[in-house]
Image (cartoon, rainbow, N blue to C red; front, side):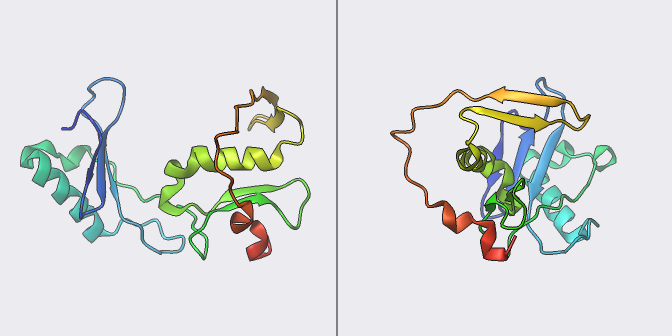
Length: 162
């Protein structure tokens, strides 16, 4: 199996090794379907993923008895543009959602955008962790002179009255 990450076109399927050492585990992913909250595996999608793995790495490279098939729900906005910014309904709520299948890809950029919108603490941000402990992060400013200007309004939660 692969020792690196691969993206296969035109199938639009990605395969990557999991773990720091050669565990033999891989992640095979692809497809975006509008299914509401249904997390059942679509057999034709599963078969297509397995087919790509076998085609590129050989029939013996895939063992379904060791596979863990699952479907991940990824919220996507109605206009396919992430929703990033301050809520129009609640003063203490910020949104960073609706990225669809591109959530991991966009995470650093959208996180930076959200930080820029929230930075009224001058470099300090307070989080409450799941066990209700307070965590204070000090953000070291990065020279933003070379960053492109971004019109944040296109990401505004206001377009959905959020």
